[in-house]
Length: 261
Image (cartoon, rainbow, N blue to C red):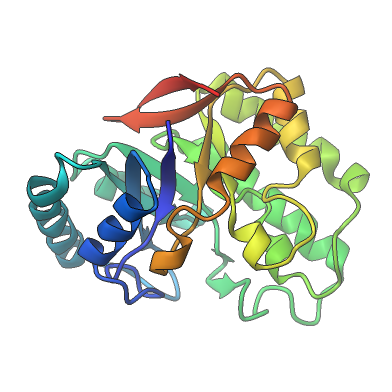
């Protein structure tokens, strides 16, 4: 299955690509399935219900137009914080989702990309707080499919990669809960575009997930432009096979489907 499970269009505040342009690019690049995961980040930025309604309306229109050429899935990227869980529960139960990507882009309404969360704090402190917050979320929220770009803070860490062995115990605690609850993780191919020098999440995290018995895994291009719609997906699938994974997953009505690599 050649699929992108992390795609944005102009319904996300950081993207201007029309949905039909994204779909045409996906078809031209040979994708069999694409899942739209528009942003909802309650905090500094918020996507309101009216936008969700418009998104669903456009999605249904696109499915009628292009559904015979490519499989389209209705998803969302929940940019959650522990104090916003209740609001996301309401959104989840308001729509018939195929897939929910659980992400974290800010803590206490302080964003990572702007350095608002990291500024004037030791790396050890903000890295540990990042994983502690993620642990709170997976401990108290279960209406999601996979964790999106689990170590995304690395993308914005001006101090470089934090040693894995110093944070492994916190990551292991999170992954055990994810697996126990029947959820999974995403491999996000934007790592190549950001020149991180590793996968996202890191190879260490992916291998740990496998060692702990994790099987549910999706590949997402985190695409915001047509040229990124299928970016490095096949290369990433090959790497997962090398790590010992036998399947990649797609989702239908929140139920994972396993496809042999």
